[in-house]
Length: 124
Image 1 (cartoon, rainbow, N blue to C red):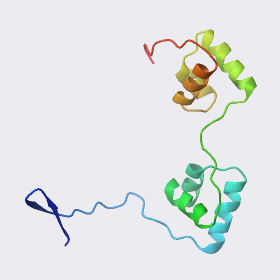
Image 2 (tube, one colour; image 1 turned 180 degrees about the vertical axis):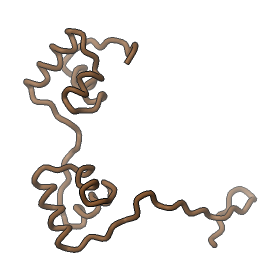
Image 3 (tube, rainbow, N blue to C red; image 1 turned 45 degrees about the horizontal axis):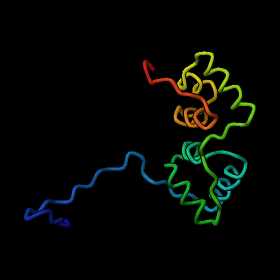
């Protein structure tokens, strides 16, 4: 057992079991993972599909020299116009996030960047 020193006390190292142990992929599976990523699936979706954490998926892609794209949702100009219209009509950023399948913070930043005066966070 490895001993870690903290102050003058010696504490034993505690191992926490993984919630989802790493799964070893065969070369053909990594090829499939790359193809699915190139077709548009995200890291989280691929992780669920292959039974691993999104960071493990990312590591596989990087080892194969794949450039990573941002997973942040980007709204089209038409969607921004609709977001602004709905928000100004009374919809909350939380409601818009659900409607547009995005994070609330992404909706909020998009509205703010479009020049919308944001309401208080009142009652979600």
